[in-house]
Length: 313
Image (cartoon, rainbow, N blue to C red; front, top):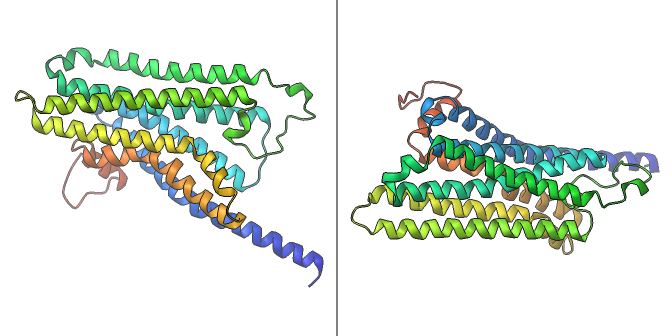
């Protein structure tokens, strides 16, 4: 076999391998996106969802998670296709990914506080957790995430882009590529640590408060138990989101001890399980646990076919 034929065969095998990995990874991610989008549509389909603070907060969480999944999938497909972007385009994608990644834990904090008020101060719940206050809380969450992005952009201004021959990137677009300089990297770690430690402290505190309230004779035991389980799930979600933020560090450590083919398999598996799946958990958790959402969600997931159980939304 000639050298040209061998080169073409090697190139073809590499291309086939990339296509197979990309397909195997993209199929579950597309399923997750479909579930999330269906859940978003479900939460806008009825007045009971649009007028309840709990469901409005869930909608906000799902918007952030779906945006993060979409951006992550775009960046993944670009890397599989070996497409190198310019710094401005990559920077836009990375900043959007960072922005939506911070919205999720902050929204979980607000959702935990809402459950705490519902159980521990049920008589004041309607007064405290109003649609207006919920909207203000969501605005604060997005404002904090926006300030984080603003700081990232200001730190990027110190990089001498004018010294580059071209703005075309030599590497594939990724979060680690745009965290240029030690100051930017240190700030990102410090902010992420602050957000997740604060979120964990609030969720654990509300969980303890609900447990204490559950022992009170005046508290609805069933409601307290459901709230406690929900807060536990919020803590699990927070842990999974935190795990996704240290994904690059984990991959970097694994890359030193395994071969490239094995690394690609591990990388794609971690991408689905650590980055994409946690962003779909909110839809699965609330969609299956909540008796109000479940029949409507199943109705839309089944493309509005009549369910065997005869449940009508």
